Structure formats: structure tokens, C-alpha cells
Length: 497
Image (cartoon, rainbow, N blue to C red; front, side, top):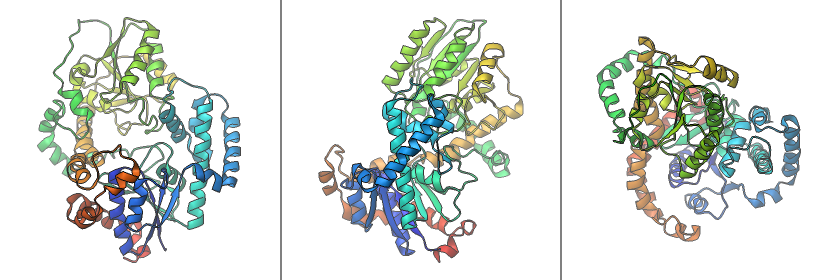
């Protein structure tokens, strides 16, 4: 099979540099590459691509509408049919926005939230209709481009919202004649329909944490790991040290009532990154849970996400004022998370990391309301719908103790996910490397410069001469070549390696 590659551009500095390295590898294999971008054709990113040899570009901008009138009209009728089917409530659109027999509902709704921050609205509105129409149009355009030009090798950079990467992934992840490669930070991974579902992160296989190799590693390093982890000394993500490093603690009087901890997610994050979320969005999760809990005897702690914004905090505070209950307390993000967990009897979350931390610290099950990557383990209780949640909160809410096997699984999962899986996803040293080594060397420090002047100040010659000596780019080259040479994926015959 003759391959033609399409890069789904994200637009940030590091993805442009990565695509340059990938482009160089593909050129050696006689594979032509093109770029599709959410940005205007005059952006510096596109000029950078042109500088290293890419000639074909596609854009989603205002001119796209004029050049694709048939798709414009078709998208309008698609939109009308979808509205007639789903009618008033936005929750109906999550599972029933089928385009080319693929459900785009979660992606479109999260795109709407990203654009509007309208977490409280539960009914269809003009802003949602605009996002729905624009999303359908983008899907139609991208499908047309792929069919017309026969692209069959895609490099994507994103999982969430509506953009070229997620559209490609949704349309073609089960097409055997097309290959999709996910590229992000240090990760290069072939997307397969069996293991990469739309809008979900891959679950960790239970077999992994029972392997001899892993158990040997766990016994050697776990004690030191947990000590560092819960004192805020592990920093693969910026919010973890903030959560556990703080010296600020709270003391509470003893009570016979249960203390329930609701762990907020960042309201602006992709609300349906994990599938089967029983709520409309993260704000809805807090509101609907409080509606039930406020009528019980329990004390309720609301813990904002350590990386949440002031506007998100204000939104939650306004919600709490409506309930006007002295049983509800908001816990500052400056308070040590270990302290907060130790004071709590039950934890309710959707898919947060705290859903693993709570069982490890308290030896109690967490209550989880979405398909978290750990939802298949018995150290948490998976709630499948609102009816079940309401029943548990009203009639059956109590601390559920873990047995020794479940407790050990929780510890192994946390150790594995952060020492291997999360380290791979976040590439623990990558951000610092980018900050110290790449940006100052090759890009102007003033990001507010107009594109025209920003482009002129990029040090192309330095980059083109030195990238092969850089460990990170050598790693990217090694990983991609390893993937393309893997017999399991049949690249060898197709690419004539």
C-alpha cells in the first residue's frame, strides 16, 4: 500500500518541532506529508512547515465556508435532523449525535463548554447550535479531504474537543486501510480500535500489576515512592506538589455524622475525556450530588481542584450559597490533601487521581461516577447511573472497608500508574527540557509578538543543525522507527522498509 501522511497540527511550539522530525523520517521512506490546521494560513506554524518542505495545507477558517458550499448546506440539514431527534435537553445529545455512524456528541458538547464556559445550561441554546453546526461542517470537510486525496497515515495530537485530531480518530480508528499514530510529548502510539475507544483513556490491564517483573519492582521501591508521593516530592504534574506539599492543615471536632468529600474536577477541562460519565458536566456533578446530600445528616466537604481557576471557584461558591446549608464546607486548595483525606469517611469523584489516593490512604473504597482508568478494580465502587447514586446517597452511604487483596491492588495501581503509565503520558522531564533547551534556543521569548515578527525571529538554522544531537528528538526518531518496523502492525511490507 502506498502511504500519504496528514499531520493534524495543534499549533504549539513542541508539536511543530516534533512534526519536523517525523517529516524527515517519512521523507526517507518516500511518504508525502500534508498539514491540516485550525489556524489561518498566515500563522507562523504554517510558514515553519513550508520552511522544511511541506507544500500542501488545509485550513479551517472563514474562507473554508465559501469553497465548500455543498458541505455547508449538507451540514445544515444534518444539524436539523440531529436537533429534531434529540430536541430540548443537552444530555440527549451526548449519546445521540451520530455522524457517519460515529457518535460525536461528547466531543461537540465539550467543545461547546470550552467556548462558552456555560456549565449551568441544560437545554439547547443558540451558542450550542452554532458549535454543533460548525462541528458537523468540520467533519464533512475533513472527510472530503481524506477521500479526495487518499490520505491513509495520520499523525494526531489531541484526544478531546472538536479538532482535526479527534475527527480523524473518530472517523477512521476502525478502518483497516488507515493508520492513526498519536504523538504527544514523549509518546508515539498506534491507535487501534480494540484498545483506543472514542473519548477514553486506556485502562491498565490487571495482569500487569501481577507480573513477576512488576512485583519485584514494587517490593523494592514502593515504600520510598509512597513516602515521596504523599509529601509532594513527585512532580510529574504541576498540581500534585501543590496538593501534598502544603503545611496548612485543618482540625475538626469529633462527630457521629459521616464526612463526605466531593472532589471537584477542573470545570474547564474536557468533561467527557472518560466515557459513561453519569452527569452532564463537572459542575452538574457537584450540583446534583449536593441536592441529595444536603437533605441528609452528613457533613459535606467540597475540595476544589488544585489547578482550578478563580472563576471556577466563584461558580462553586455561588452554587453553595443557593443551598444555604451550614453542613457544606469548601476546603481551600492550600490545605494539605493528605490531611483532607484523613478527615473524610467517604469520597465521591468522577475519575480523579484522588479516587486512587483515598483507598491507599484510608483503606476504604472510593465512589466513582465515570469510567475512570481504574474503574475495573474493586478498590472503588463504580456508580452506573443517577438512580443508583441517589439510592446510595440517601439509604446506603457508609465507609466500605477494603480487604487485604483490594488494598494491595490500590497501592500497586497507584505505583504503576505514576511510575510507568503517567510518567509516560506526562514525560516527567519533558516540560523542563522544553523550557530550558528548546524554547530559548529556537523561539523568541516574547509570545505576544505578531506572527509575522515571531516567525522572523525563529532561529531555523540553529534548529536544523542541532536537532539530531538532542536526546529528546533522537528519542522521537527511535520510537517512530521502532513503531514503523513492528511486524505486528504490518508496516514493514507496506512501507518497503
